[in-house]
Length: 429
Image (cartoon, rainbow, N blue to C red; front, side, top):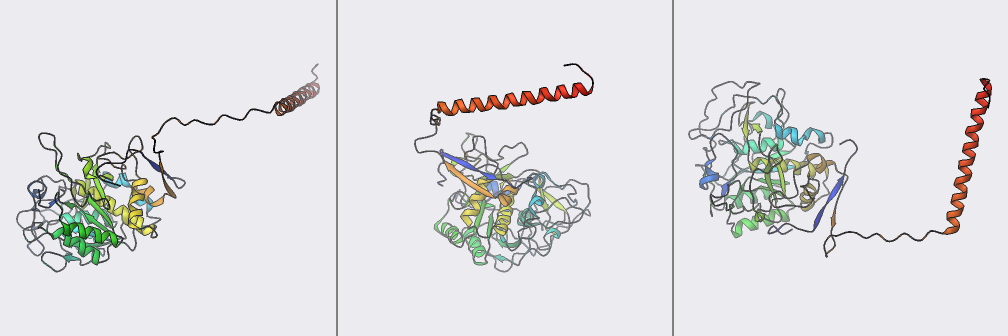
């Protein structure tokens, strides 16, 4: 499907349900108290790199406390959170991943998080994080000084933890961290392409990209094409850059705008998109992006997060579940299944900025059939039904006689019953 314009003559097929239910690269911001520097000013990602000293937690993790925003540290690294999310946050209630865990939890699927690394010390990700790769400084990527990659990985695959209401979408999936930022938190030219190549070579089944650029080069396009050829599902965040003061939309991000990449925007509890994306952005799906929490890089606490990168993480988790439960589907079929089973916008057709609608996690995994119908080339209109054939007079007379005989017999039977019962009670007819 061309991303320059959404189809105007496509009707989305329904799902048969189971019984009962600038040239600089930028990173989509996780909503925090302070805006993420990279999303506004170019390539910088707030925070330092693994190996530097941790900012000590001031409080012990405490239940029944609202998780604070993910900190934007300037000195040291993000430490433990002082709060545990006891109740399920809205995105978890909205997607309800537990409803499909009797079918699959994402076993056997490797999800690459191409971002700031993923901390293997996060309690909700214990045993889930591989060593991964740092494509800038070399070495592993299983530490995360910034906390952003860990938060995205938690949305995808955090395991249930006693006392916490937060869980990931696919808690049996494995996480492959790929760090693409340098020692100052900068995302340099070529890093995104190198990260995608590293995830491809490591055998990822799903790649999550909360990053993008308005001016992709040949190397980045080639890396995306190579991943698609390897049958990898690529899920990317759309840009969260606000329209200018004149109302002009920001340039669409790549790889999200690629036809073979699932482009994801955010949706709030009111059902409205959280970003204003132009048609060229190629939004395919919406997913929860506000009111979210995820795991801290260390300890058992949580931080509140948000933005289209979080929405993309929910869809990446859904893709992992679909890949695990429907291993016969290739990457294009997985993407299309997620689209066709979504909660479609009014009118049932894809719309700019909304795409196919909001992720329906249960249907994406459990729907028995998905289908797609197309209108005739000449457009839609009233359908003229053929005239019924003329009735046979002889058959009509016979039917009327038969009906009359049945009615007479029924009346006679009722009368006889009334008389018989009346005589028993000594009534007179």
